Length: 326
Ligand code: AMP
Ligand code: TRP
Image (tube, rainbow, N blue to C red):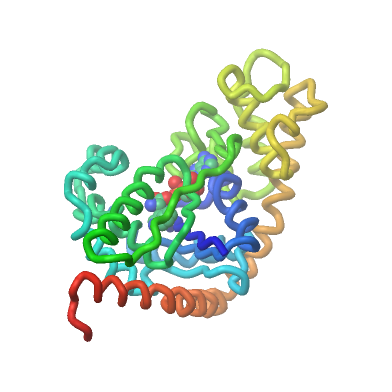
């Protein structure tokens, strides 16, 4: 079976873009692939974090993974820092990457250029991400476009290590969601819905109450025409609603457009579809939230499963690179 690995940082609240663009696909694909999904808390440390908030966000994102339907009996769900091999292999990856390669990453240039404090980890972050991926003999990494360059680097590092020290790692490839899976900001439909959006009203959170979802969608920016059709360039707002309606009901945006002649009913149906999608997720999240010990238990099981593969890969890499047996 194809081994799939993906990670998500425990920073900010999970929104509809994360759900329709990433989590829903992970849930769907867990049955046909050998999937590993990781809450990458070590990656969050590249920028300063409040300790209590980070701990809470890590638990909550783990609970969100479970609430959306990742089933620990079917796939592997765990927290990155619970498997020490991630940090262990990251060092070998840092020593395999060149500083020029790391400095060329556009995300480093963006984030590093803006921050007043730039940690060493912000630069070496892609080496840690390569370690995440390579530890599990990963074939496919489902990511958004912004992570394409990091997965390319993981490929390059795997190939370089293999050619220097002998066959050690599976060379992974990135896979991308299909067109229409990109959810845009409701108030600014030319930028993607994100945790760091300028307006909270442009972002639907997975834990938003039905009334809040309805209000945000009702106020979503459209255009001065009244025709309903999927045309991202000419009608970004309406197209975004169609992507959301389609994504929430398992259809393409074009299919979702059929039958609508006005924006009012489109918005009402989109809101209803999103509320129906979120309600069961919210109910499961509340149950998990009420019993953190059970989540911790499931995460321990996930970490133990992950460690089995990760330890074997790290042992292989250690041996090939010339570290003495412990
Ligand atoms: P982030 O919120 O940037 O940490 O992204 C976590 C995952 O959600 C990544 O796989 C992204 O590609 C996906 N994602 C984030 N924002 C969106 C969006 N607006 N539309 C679709 N997918 C998204
Ligand atoms: N860097 C990714 C992000 O910010 C998160 C991530 C860390 C990841 N390790 C990964 C994604 C491994 C895929 C595979 O979104």
